Length: 325
Image (cartoon, rainbow, N blue to C red):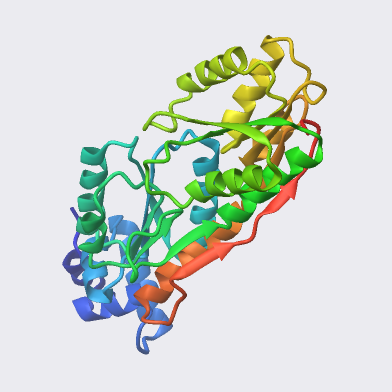
């Protein structure tokens, strides 16, 4: 492997001069710069990024840990985090935890070894102490784990209210809410809290159905919908805690011979890009996914650079009414 010493020797300059050229520091003549760059190209030299990170005390790399990269919400989130990180001069290391605590811990150790500038946590399998002991800038998505660690969330309570109130305003009299497992300590649980509050406030009959602990296991969604329609054939409204669950509800209702929205109205949550592909088009509560990604990168940068930052970041949601309601 070619080293910086090889470049200096062939170019006839000092190692310090090569370093200054690479880092664009200090005054050097154009002739010297051109000579060093030509030698670098001839030798196909690649700087040791780990060594440069030690020198600069930053790697320009952000770690992103998510539970399932195939899930449309997290795919869109990863896309936006990468975009804004690149605009900020950083690259992203993507880690797909698959809700496996062993895998997640290995990823965290890898990110620490690579001296990343910070970690955006979209997966929360490990115990809280694992995050507290990182000693590195960190941002959590949709979970508050420590008073000193900043988090980002959509206004889940307001989103739940908007969805529930819409179904009631459309005349629904028995409404089902399908959500993730409420034993998981996620801020998304406020969607269910708001749904329940609205139902009690209006005196509307309702049923709440939770997934198992593996909330991203799509195989269970169809079974949940089939069971719901068999046990509660008079349900005329469904609020699903994600657009993917809502899509399964739409499919299940069609299979059962129920017209949407004629017999039953459906609304999801997230407003992922794929909702426009469904027929009929799915109503949803829009999370500002792009803004979540932008803010995550900004919070990492501010922590890294010692700038003041907000620890609680709750972003507004929007009702996107389409054909299913």
